[in-house]
Length: 304
Image 1 (tube, rainbow, N blue to C red):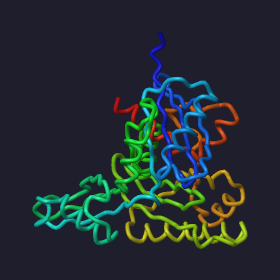
Image 2: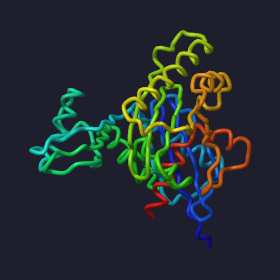
Image 3: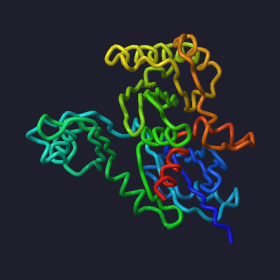
Image 4: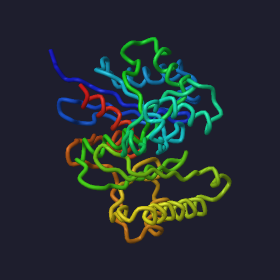
């Protein structure tokens, strides 16, 4: 009997699922794909499960060790929050209050995950706060009929990419990663086990523009955010940028980006030192779009 364990990572989109099957024994990505759902997977769990099961049936994948889901940063709240010394003893209550201020939502509407970045109870703490709507998390926890497909873990795509970089490349120092999707662009500066900075560029203003005009504007805004990050922290003067996401496969976007960030070396996240990727054309073509899904699967593998 084979002891091979297959992990499935999923990134949920507005009306799609980005999926990655990873073999833990060989540390190899077996398949990647983008599955269209037609509805929001977070709001329509029945369709989420049906589309996923149909894909697994089509590739004759009958068993999974575990499933992990990544939620895009644009569908979550990610903040660095300073917690005053007098509030550190009741940090969660303070952060719940903070969430209420910025969302105008009732207490308990979001599920929080936190990490203390620096400081202590005597001087106050700087905390990384990540929050996702409780109704989405509860839906994914309780809405699946198949026990095999029910997610074992959920995280934000930023953490999935951090795990991918650390697990597949072994982070050594500061790295800059850009995830460029049609829904928005996320720029992150990270070191081992720590998110140093996070910036986002919306794509809403690009609606009704030509591709040339839209990509030119987007590339310039990405460059502006890189420059602003370097102004805020001189240590962010990196020379290499790792790029993934749907737009990374678009030659026109890539040409505009290369022109806007000339002087930086752009490294596509389609090969890794410590992870084998699929060689079949259909699966390898989706790797850049499915980077967060790969990272989500690896996260479960690392914990096993």
